[in-house]
Length: 181
Image (cartoon, rainbow, N blue to C red):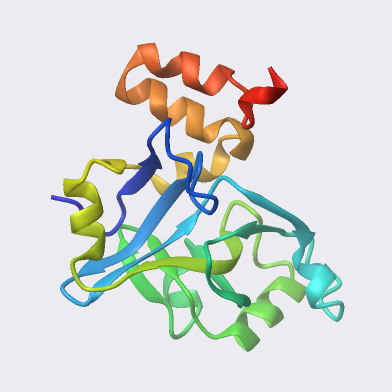
């Protein structure tokens, strides 16, 4: 049974434009639906690029998913230090008071080991993700958030595939677009 704190790993032959070669960290999974963030696709921007007033905003942004692509979200290990945070599992949280967070960033109280920022999120309606799992669209497994955020994002999908089955290494060796091989 999948739960908050688990990861979804896109199957090697998935051609979905948003989720191809994605690893998604689930923050919520309940009767109402599911919410998570793609943790392995860099957006190419830094936090300070969209909030120039944050002089210490040297945090990379990731493509969290296709839902609400004009909104900023974040997962973190700041816990009770950031009011309004939603508990995921263990010491992992998502969201929280952004004004407080900005002050913490400017005071040097937050490092890239503590937080990850996303543009948009990945969301599923009631029973939608369960249906996708039943149709074998994803691999799902337990994860360690801290370990996920320390692996090179470009290598994360392949590394997670190999943990499922070592023979899957071949899939990660192919280019994102096979015509580029």
